[in-house]
Image 1 (cartoon, rainbow, N blue to C red):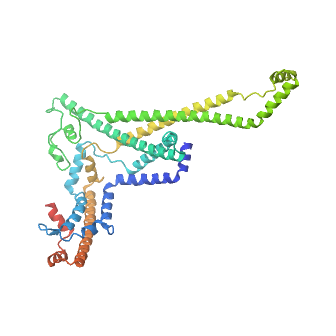
Image 2 (image 1 turned 90 degrees about the vertical axis):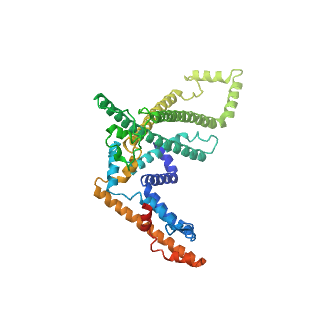
Image 3 (image 1 turned 30 degrees about the horizontal axis):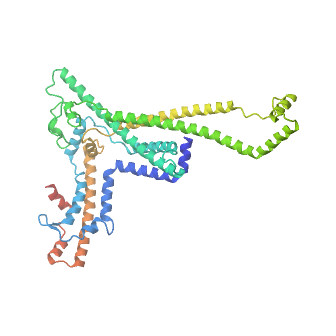
Amino acid sequence: MEEILAYIMLHKIETLLIAFAIIILAFVITHWQEVKFWWLNLTYNFPFIGKTSRLAKDIEGFDENHKWFYSEERLCRDYYNFYEKVDKDSESFDEAKAYLHAAGELGRKPTPTFIWVMIFILVVVEAFGFAYVLAGFTIPGASEATQQKGAVGVAMMLAILLVWLTHMTGQELHKNTLIKKIRRWYKNDNAGGSNWRDLKPDEQLITIDNTFDDEKSPNYIRMLNRIDVNDKVKTTYTKTILTIIFIIAVAVGATYIRDQVLKQEIASSHENAVNIFNDDASPFASADASSDEDIGALFGDTSAEDVKEDLGALFGGETLNSEKPDSNNNSIIDETNLKGGEATFLILGLMFVFIQILGIFFGMHWDFAGRESKEAYECLKGFSTKKAFLAYYERMKTHIARTAQRQLQKLQHAMNIINDNSGTDAETTALLRNNKDRTFQQYLTFEDK
């Protein structure tokens, strides 16, 4: 952990950018419709190259059926795509609630924003941990800075892939619980002698709009009508098995690489110590050699080593040569460091696996398995009462309609300016001037038809 913190402190700017990107991405995921509407307004209001500026140049295209200019219809259609999503009434409330109830997902919610933020924070921590391990192996022969950047990129891709796999696995396990419930209810019905049909969905496709069409069918058939299953209506664990294999491979691989890096560091420390000792001893090598020669010459043919041994025996010492440091202490230290490192790597591997299990749990606990369950939830917006539901959508419809009308007025004004500057025929000028009946509310009347 200290190494990871040191790595993060060394790359403060990259860490801040990643954290900012995580927050933005989590917000975009959980507020996708609001982001799309904001982007639509931006594309229309952008000066010079915005949609308003481009559509205003088309002052000749005119729809004879609706008596609207094509550019006006294009703008209203863009905003109508958002308006129809919030054009809800009391019947919409009942349909959405009934659909979720039949799918067995009433009360479930999509993954909250803070959960996505927490997931991505764990992803970043994992990525930096992997990057620290992979730094020396990603791009062999490259500079240290290039290796670190490559390691961060590889680690981020790996962590994001793990998030996606664990989330998909959680959704698969949640879907399997619904399939097991369907089969159990069907078996109980069959045991009671009240089963009157095979276990298969109806031929009619059930959606939110016609969710009451199968209300006379058994509950397990209604649930089966709303989820995609195989022809045998059995659970599948393909995503789960692939995810488990991938998690184990990454955990074992990362632990092995960490172990190799530790052994390499221990070996490098010994090499550095030997090099330092040799470098320090080299200036005195010639002096030692000449000293040995002088001793040999003084005592005749007797070698210098024999003379040193005799002198050592004479003065009670074993030898005059200084012995090398005992390597037993170094071996004990190395063994302790190796065992401690291996235990730490085992704990890190278990933490990694636990984080992936947590991601799978999040996928099981949130999000939906029904084909249109998410749309039904988005329709309900978490409102438990019909009154609050209708009040919310009335505000949203008013907001979108007013925004669309303002944009339409800007477009019509720009079209009039271009017409005045270009000088078109009198009929086109009259049509552009008489735009009081071409409003967004008027567009809704013939769009609904």
